[in-house]
Length: 370
Picture 1 (cartoon, rainbow, N blue to C red):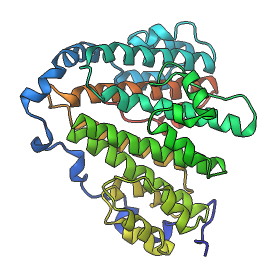
Picture 2: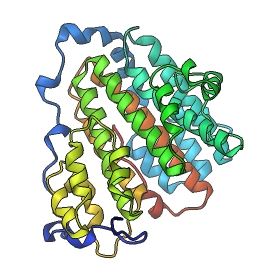
Picture 3: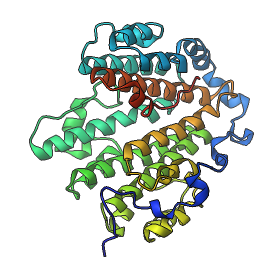
Picture 4: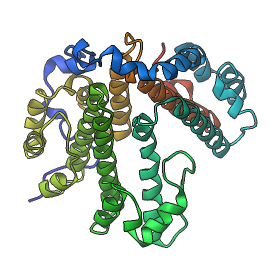
Protein backbone atom coordinates (compact mmCIF):
# COMPACT_ATOMS: atom_id res chain seq x y z
CA UNK A 1 0.00 0.00 0.00
CA UNK A 2 1.27 3.45 -0.85
CA UNK A 3 2.13 5.79 2.00
CA UNK A 4 0.03 8.97 1.77
CA UNK A 5 1.98 12.05 0.71
CA UNK A 6 1.65 15.34 -1.08
CA UNK A 7 4.30 16.84 -3.32
CA UNK A 8 3.77 20.43 -2.17
CA UNK A 9 3.12 20.15 1.54
CA UNK A 10 5.30 19.26 4.46
CA UNK A 11 4.40 15.62 5.21
CA UNK A 12 4.97 15.91 8.96
CA UNK A 13 4.09 19.53 9.76
CA UNK A 14 0.95 18.74 11.72
CA UNK A 15 2.85 16.76 14.29
CA UNK A 16 5.25 19.47 15.45
CA UNK A 17 5.21 20.02 19.17
CA UNK A 18 4.52 23.54 20.56
CA UNK A 19 7.99 24.19 21.94
CA UNK A 20 9.45 23.60 18.47
CA UNK A 21 6.91 25.96 16.90
CA UNK A 22 8.23 28.59 19.31
CA UNK A 23 11.79 28.06 18.12
CA UNK A 24 13.03 26.33 21.27
CA UNK A 25 15.47 23.53 20.61
CA UNK A 26 17.28 21.03 22.74
CA UNK A 27 21.00 21.05 23.40
CA UNK A 28 23.29 19.73 20.70
CA UNK A 29 23.73 15.95 20.66
CA UNK A 30 26.79 14.52 22.36
CA UNK A 31 28.32 13.32 19.11
CA UNK A 32 28.97 16.94 18.06
CA UNK A 33 31.58 17.29 20.80
CA UNK A 34 34.89 15.46 20.72
CA UNK A 35 35.57 13.34 23.77
CA UNK A 36 39.19 12.93 24.86
CA UNK A 37 38.58 9.20 24.60
CA UNK A 38 38.02 9.64 20.84
CA UNK A 39 41.49 11.17 20.32
CA UNK A 40 44.40 8.93 19.38
CA UNK A 41 47.57 8.74 21.46
CA UNK A 42 50.37 11.21 20.79
CA UNK A 43 52.68 8.52 19.42
CA UNK A 44 50.05 7.58 16.85
CA UNK A 45 49.20 11.08 15.64
CA UNK A 46 52.70 12.52 15.24
CA UNK A 47 52.90 10.95 11.79
CA UNK A 48 50.63 13.81 10.68
CA UNK A 49 52.90 16.46 12.21
CA UNK A 50 54.34 17.68 8.89
CA UNK A 51 50.91 18.02 7.27
CA UNK A 52 49.49 19.82 10.29
CA UNK A 53 52.40 22.28 10.32
CA UNK A 54 51.64 23.09 6.67
CA UNK A 55 47.95 23.48 7.42
CA UNK A 56 48.55 25.98 10.23
CA UNK A 57 50.19 28.28 7.70
CA UNK A 58 47.42 27.81 5.13
CA UNK A 59 44.72 28.52 7.73
CA UNK A 60 45.88 32.14 8.05
CA UNK A 61 44.48 32.86 4.58
CA UNK A 62 41.21 30.96 4.76
CA UNK A 63 37.82 32.50 4.07
CA UNK A 64 36.22 34.15 7.12
CA UNK A 65 32.72 35.32 7.92
CA UNK A 66 33.92 38.88 7.27
CA UNK A 67 34.87 37.88 3.73
CA UNK A 68 31.51 36.23 3.21
CA UNK A 69 29.57 39.22 4.53
CA UNK A 70 31.40 41.50 2.11
CA UNK A 71 30.93 39.07 -0.78
CA UNK A 72 27.18 38.92 -0.24
CA UNK A 73 26.87 42.70 -0.48
CA UNK A 74 29.37 43.18 -3.31
CA UNK A 75 28.87 42.99 -7.07
CA UNK A 76 30.39 40.09 -9.01
CA UNK A 77 33.43 42.15 -10.01
CA UNK A 78 33.89 43.50 -6.48
CA UNK A 79 33.61 39.96 -5.15
CA UNK A 80 36.56 38.86 -7.27
CA UNK A 81 38.66 41.64 -5.73
CA UNK A 82 37.62 40.56 -2.22
CA UNK A 83 38.65 36.99 -3.02
CA UNK A 84 42.13 38.26 -3.96
CA UNK A 85 42.67 38.39 -0.19
CA UNK A 86 42.50 34.58 -0.20
CA UNK A 87 44.24 31.90 -2.33
CA UNK A 88 40.98 31.35 -4.23
CA UNK A 89 41.28 34.75 -5.90
CA UNK A 90 44.25 33.68 -8.00
CA UNK A 91 42.08 31.03 -9.69
CA UNK A 92 39.23 33.40 -10.58
CA UNK A 93 41.05 36.40 -12.04
CA UNK A 94 39.67 35.94 -15.55
CA UNK A 95 36.23 34.59 -14.62
CA UNK A 96 33.19 36.32 -16.10
CA UNK A 97 30.79 33.39 -16.55
CA UNK A 98 29.44 30.67 -14.24
CA UNK A 99 31.34 28.02 -16.22
CA UNK A 100 34.59 29.92 -15.69
CA UNK A 101 33.86 30.18 -11.96
CA UNK A 102 33.44 26.40 -11.86
CA UNK A 103 36.68 25.81 -13.75
CA UNK A 104 38.64 28.09 -11.42
CA UNK A 105 37.20 26.66 -8.22
CA UNK A 106 37.74 23.08 -9.38
CA UNK A 107 41.37 23.93 -10.17
CA UNK A 108 41.79 25.42 -6.69
CA UNK A 109 40.35 22.31 -5.06
CA UNK A 110 42.46 20.03 -7.24
CA UNK A 111 45.64 21.86 -6.22
CA UNK A 112 44.57 21.76 -2.56
CA UNK A 113 44.22 17.98 -2.75
CA UNK A 114 47.51 17.65 -4.61
CA UNK A 115 49.58 19.77 -2.24
CA UNK A 116 48.21 18.28 0.95
CA UNK A 117 48.23 14.75 -0.42
CA UNK A 118 52.02 14.94 -0.83
CA UNK A 119 52.39 15.89 2.84
CA UNK A 120 50.42 12.91 4.16
CA UNK A 121 51.81 9.47 5.05
CA UNK A 122 51.62 6.93 2.22
CA UNK A 123 49.29 4.72 4.22
CA UNK A 124 46.79 7.51 4.96
CA UNK A 125 43.20 7.15 3.77
CA UNK A 126 42.18 10.78 4.36
CA UNK A 127 42.51 11.93 0.75
CA UNK A 128 40.65 8.86 -0.52
CA UNK A 129 37.87 9.70 1.94
CA UNK A 130 37.34 13.07 0.29
CA UNK A 131 38.25 12.38 -3.32
CA UNK A 132 36.11 9.27 -3.81
CA UNK A 133 33.10 11.63 -3.98
CA UNK A 134 34.22 12.73 -7.43
CA UNK A 135 34.73 9.15 -8.61
CA UNK A 136 31.12 8.35 -7.75
CA UNK A 137 29.98 11.64 -9.30
CA UNK A 138 31.77 10.84 -12.58
CA UNK A 139 30.50 7.27 -12.55
CA UNK A 140 26.96 8.60 -12.18
CA UNK A 141 27.37 11.05 -15.06
CA UNK A 142 28.87 8.43 -17.37
CA UNK A 143 26.30 5.75 -16.52
CA UNK A 144 23.35 8.09 -17.10
CA UNK A 145 24.83 9.27 -20.41
CA UNK A 146 25.21 5.68 -21.56
CA UNK A 147 21.59 4.95 -20.63
CA UNK A 148 20.25 7.96 -22.54
CA UNK A 149 22.71 7.92 -25.44
CA UNK A 150 23.70 11.52 -24.71
CA UNK A 151 27.00 13.15 -23.93
CA UNK A 152 27.93 13.04 -20.22
CA UNK A 153 27.47 16.31 -18.34
CA UNK A 154 29.37 17.71 -15.37
CA UNK A 155 32.41 15.43 -15.47
CA UNK A 156 35.10 16.53 -13.01
CA UNK A 157 38.51 15.43 -14.17
CA UNK A 158 41.50 15.33 -11.84
CA UNK A 159 39.53 15.58 -8.59
CA UNK A 160 38.85 11.90 -7.99
CA UNK A 161 41.16 8.92 -7.59
CA UNK A 162 40.19 7.26 -10.90
CA UNK A 163 40.85 8.54 -14.42
CA UNK A 164 37.86 9.12 -16.68
CA UNK A 165 39.24 6.59 -19.18
CA UNK A 166 39.26 3.96 -16.46
CA UNK A 167 35.63 4.67 -15.62
CA UNK A 168 34.71 4.58 -19.33
CA UNK A 169 36.23 1.11 -19.62
CA UNK A 170 34.37 0.08 -16.48
CA UNK A 171 31.04 0.79 -18.14
CA UNK A 172 31.86 -1.85 -20.75
CA UNK A 173 33.38 -4.27 -18.27
CA UNK A 174 32.75 -3.52 -14.57
CA UNK A 175 35.34 -6.11 -13.55
CA UNK A 176 38.20 -3.80 -14.57
CA UNK A 177 37.15 -1.37 -11.85
CA UNK A 178 38.24 -1.65 -8.21
CA UNK A 179 35.82 -2.25 -5.36
CA UNK A 180 33.30 -0.67 -4.69
CA UNK A 181 32.79 0.82 -8.17
CA UNK A 182 32.39 -2.58 -9.80
CA UNK A 183 29.66 -3.53 -7.34
CA UNK A 184 27.97 -0.15 -7.81
CA UNK A 185 27.68 -0.65 -11.57
CA UNK A 186 26.37 -4.16 -11.12
CA UNK A 187 23.59 -2.90 -8.85
CA UNK A 188 22.74 0.07 -11.09
CA UNK A 189 21.73 -2.36 -13.83
CA UNK A 190 18.71 -3.33 -11.69
CA UNK A 191 17.28 0.19 -11.41
CA UNK A 192 15.68 2.51 -13.93
CA UNK A 193 14.67 6.01 -12.83
CA UNK A 194 17.16 8.87 -12.32
CA UNK A 195 16.15 9.12 -8.65
CA UNK A 196 16.85 5.41 -8.12
CA UNK A 197 20.23 5.67 -9.84
CA UNK A 198 21.20 8.72 -7.78
CA UNK A 199 20.21 7.08 -4.51
CA UNK A 200 22.00 3.81 -5.23
CA UNK A 201 25.24 5.60 -6.11
CA UNK A 202 24.98 7.87 -3.06
CA UNK A 203 24.46 4.83 -0.83
CA UNK A 204 27.57 3.11 -2.14
CA UNK A 205 29.52 6.36 -1.73
CA UNK A 206 28.47 6.86 1.89
CA UNK A 207 29.16 3.26 2.84
CA UNK A 208 32.56 3.37 1.12
CA UNK A 209 33.54 6.47 3.11
CA UNK A 210 32.69 4.63 6.32
CA UNK A 211 34.94 1.79 5.18
CA UNK A 212 37.80 4.24 4.46
CA UNK A 213 37.32 5.90 7.85
CA UNK A 214 37.57 2.49 9.50
CA UNK A 215 40.75 1.73 7.57
CA UNK A 216 42.23 5.02 8.81
CA UNK A 217 41.34 3.85 12.33
CA UNK A 218 40.15 7.34 13.24
CA UNK A 219 37.18 7.41 15.65
CA UNK A 220 36.37 10.96 14.56
CA UNK A 221 36.30 10.07 10.86
CA UNK A 222 34.12 7.06 11.63
CA UNK A 223 31.70 9.25 13.59
CA UNK A 224 31.61 11.79 10.76
CA UNK A 225 30.91 9.08 8.17
CA UNK A 226 28.16 7.56 10.33
CA UNK A 227 26.53 10.94 10.92
CA UNK A 228 26.61 11.61 7.16
CA UNK A 229 24.82 8.32 6.58
CA UNK A 230 22.15 9.23 9.13
CA UNK A 231 21.49 12.61 7.54
CA UNK A 232 21.25 11.08 4.07
CA UNK A 233 18.83 8.44 5.36
CA UNK A 234 16.62 11.03 7.03
CA UNK A 235 16.51 12.99 3.77
CA UNK A 236 15.55 9.76 1.98
CA UNK A 237 12.69 9.24 4.42
CA UNK A 238 11.29 12.74 3.88
CA UNK A 239 11.68 12.62 0.10
CA UNK A 240 10.14 9.15 -0.09
CA UNK A 241 7.20 10.27 2.04
CA UNK A 242 6.58 13.20 -0.32
CA UNK A 243 6.68 10.87 -3.34
CA UNK A 244 4.57 8.16 -1.63
CA UNK A 245 7.22 5.48 -2.06
CA UNK A 246 6.69 1.95 -0.81
CA UNK A 247 8.39 0.83 2.38
CA UNK A 248 10.31 -1.78 0.38
CA UNK A 249 11.85 0.96 -1.76
CA UNK A 250 13.05 2.82 1.34
CA UNK A 251 14.51 -0.35 2.81
CA UNK A 252 16.43 -1.07 -0.40
CA UNK A 253 17.84 2.46 -0.59
CA UNK A 254 18.89 3.05 3.04
CA UNK A 255 22.63 3.34 3.57
CA UNK A 256 23.98 1.03 6.27
CA UNK A 257 26.36 1.90 9.08
CA UNK A 258 24.87 5.06 10.63
CA UNK A 259 24.09 5.68 14.28
CA UNK A 260 20.36 5.20 13.67
CA UNK A 261 19.34 1.58 13.22
CA UNK A 262 17.66 0.57 9.97
CA UNK A 263 14.73 -0.87 11.90
CA UNK A 264 14.18 2.47 13.63
CA UNK A 265 14.13 4.35 10.32
CA UNK A 266 11.68 1.89 8.77
CA UNK A 267 9.48 2.10 11.85
CA UNK A 268 9.43 5.89 11.55
CA UNK A 269 8.60 5.69 7.86
CA UNK A 270 5.69 3.38 8.51
CA UNK A 271 4.00 5.84 10.86
CA UNK A 272 1.17 8.16 9.89
CA UNK A 273 2.35 11.76 9.27
CA UNK A 274 1.04 13.01 12.63
CA UNK A 275 3.00 10.30 14.46
CA UNK A 276 6.17 10.63 12.44
CA UNK A 277 7.44 13.67 14.34
CA UNK A 278 6.87 12.00 17.71
CA UNK A 279 9.13 9.17 16.58
CA UNK A 280 11.69 11.63 15.24
CA UNK A 281 11.95 13.25 18.69
CA UNK A 282 14.14 10.38 19.80
CA UNK A 283 16.57 10.99 16.92
CA UNK A 284 19.73 12.94 17.77
CA UNK A 285 19.33 15.28 14.80
CA UNK A 286 15.73 16.23 15.54
CA UNK A 287 16.16 19.64 17.17
CA UNK A 288 18.24 21.19 14.40
CA UNK A 289 16.75 19.63 11.29
CA UNK A 290 13.15 19.42 12.34
CA UNK A 291 12.93 23.19 12.69
CA UNK A 292 12.01 22.78 9.04
CA UNK A 293 8.50 21.82 10.13
CA UNK A 294 7.84 24.62 12.64
CA UNK A 295 5.79 26.64 10.14
CA UNK A 296 2.35 25.23 9.37
CA UNK A 297 2.59 26.54 5.81
CA UNK A 298 6.19 25.53 5.22
CA UNK A 299 6.82 23.70 1.97
CA UNK A 300 9.50 21.03 2.21
CA UNK A 301 12.65 22.04 0.35
CA UNK A 302 15.30 19.38 0.29
CA UNK A 303 17.92 22.00 -0.58
CA UNK A 304 17.22 23.56 2.82
CA UNK A 305 17.57 20.14 4.43
CA UNK A 306 20.96 19.82 2.69
CA UNK A 307 22.05 23.20 4.03
CA UNK A 308 21.12 22.33 7.59
CA UNK A 309 22.80 18.94 7.25
CA UNK A 310 26.03 20.58 6.05
CA UNK A 311 25.91 23.00 8.97
CA UNK A 312 25.45 20.17 11.43
CA UNK A 313 28.44 18.32 10.01
CA UNK A 314 30.50 21.52 10.10
CA UNK A 315 29.71 21.91 13.79
CA UNK A 316 31.06 18.43 14.23
CA UNK A 317 34.27 19.44 12.44
CA UNK A 318 34.54 22.63 14.50
CA UNK A 319 34.63 20.46 17.60
CA UNK A 320 38.14 19.31 16.62
CA UNK A 321 39.72 22.77 16.90
CA UNK A 322 41.33 22.07 20.26
CA UNK A 323 43.16 19.04 18.85
CA UNK A 324 46.67 20.21 17.96
CA UNK A 325 47.99 17.31 15.88
CA UNK A 326 46.70 14.16 14.25
CA UNK A 327 44.01 13.16 11.77
CA UNK A 328 41.48 15.71 13.00
CA UNK A 329 43.23 18.99 11.95
CA UNK A 330 43.94 17.55 8.49
CA UNK A 331 40.37 16.38 8.06
CA UNK A 332 38.99 19.70 9.30
CA UNK A 333 41.17 21.69 6.89
CA UNK A 334 40.10 19.69 3.82
CA UNK A 335 36.44 19.85 4.80
CA UNK A 336 36.77 23.60 5.40
CA UNK A 337 38.33 24.16 1.97
CA UNK A 338 35.58 22.16 0.27
CA UNK A 339 33.02 24.25 2.13
CA UNK A 340 34.74 27.45 0.95
CA UNK A 341 34.50 26.32 -2.66
CA UNK A 342 30.79 25.58 -2.20
CA UNK A 343 30.14 29.00 -0.66
CA UNK A 344 32.13 31.00 -3.21
CA UNK A 345 30.46 29.18 -6.11
CA UNK A 346 27.03 29.80 -4.61
CA UNK A 347 27.63 33.51 -4.03
CA UNK A 348 29.31 34.30 -7.36
CA UNK A 349 26.78 32.40 -9.46
CA UNK A 350 23.98 34.12 -7.53
CA UNK A 351 25.60 37.46 -8.37
CA UNK A 352 25.66 36.56 -12.06
CA UNK A 353 21.93 35.84 -11.85
CA UNK A 354 21.20 39.09 -10.00
CA UNK A 355 19.90 37.34 -6.88
CA UNK A 356 19.36 39.74 -3.97
CA UNK A 357 21.76 39.62 -0.96
CA UNK A 358 18.88 38.71 1.37
CA UNK A 359 18.13 35.62 -0.69
CA UNK A 360 21.80 34.64 -0.88
CA UNK A 361 22.16 34.81 2.92
CA UNK A 362 19.45 32.17 3.31
CA UNK A 363 21.50 29.74 1.22
CA UNK A 364 24.82 30.15 3.02
CA UNK A 365 26.61 27.43 4.99
CA UNK A 366 28.59 27.87 8.17
CA UNK A 367 32.33 28.39 7.88
CA UNK A 368 35.02 26.53 9.78
CA UNK A 369 36.70 29.81 10.74
CA UNK A 370 34.38 32.58 11.94
